[in-house]
Length: 161
Image (cartoon, rainbow, N blue to C red; front, top):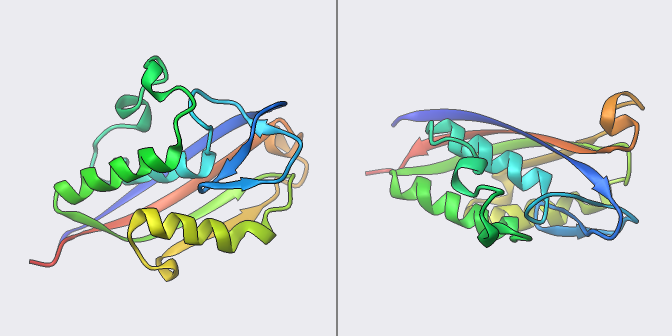
């Protein structure tokens, strides 16, 4: 069996009149995140981790923000394409660990739904998807309520032959 590890990091600024979506789940908050797609910062970090594990570039390479096809795209649909890509290369996801960094809103009530949403699209057990949330203790862009960032680590393994 071959193992590959990948790291993904993403951040997006807050903006009015946008939905706040994390891991495919809409979060109730008065601000959303700005981006070419739906700006799902957690899903973007996970996609970059998966792509990075196989040295396949970034989500910006696969889904460029200059392409109108991806304007307001559903990041979970993009994640499905990334999962299919790694499956085609003979790999599957062993597990993912992630953290969302946001001073607001409080995300604990959404973690179970986010985990389930991601596990479904990733085609793995919920027990293999770690999602945590933390604050920045009022430091930096997240702490100053400028936006949200997310970090993710993924372990890929070759399919059993």
